[in-house]
Length: 134
Image (cartoon, rainbow, N blue to C red; front, side, top):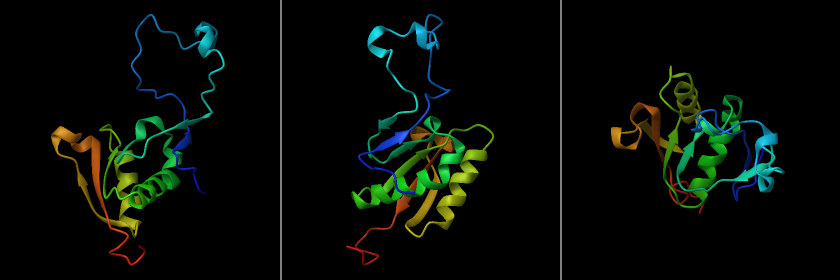
């Protein structure tokens, strides 16, 4: 499956998004200018070398991670930070399994504490020139 990489992706609001007690999740309580907001509509995401998986369903990983890495590589971004969260490690293991199988991944490692620690993985991508693609 190919995703439009301006970057548009259908996503749900993050369950980890911070809310104040005054905020409501009821669509009827949204301000008038937000009443037509569709949580299933594509949202533009930047290709900036950081992929925060908190915004996506685990079932999206199989296509999302490889497609995002390929687009970063095509744009010359050869170090990518994938934020999977700390939790119990299920998402981290899934990401690492995908990275292990990817031919464009040169190496990966857990991020240092200042870049997310064991809640993020740094990925080094092979360059297009090194593969003879460019």
